[in-house]
Image (cartoon, rainbow, N blue to C red):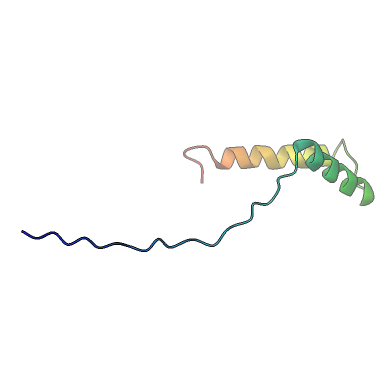
Length: 68
């Protein structure tokens, strides 16, 4: 038997530049600054805190097994 060896050229993928991630503190500061500039309350009914809490809980529930 004769073995045939085939060399494959390595195909380089284009370099993907990582996007710098903002720290948690920076993200919170951005949310608070934007809420204040738009006249949104930070706490209370319809405030930023309530909206973020709702969004986090909905996201967590959506990832539970047996849910949509």
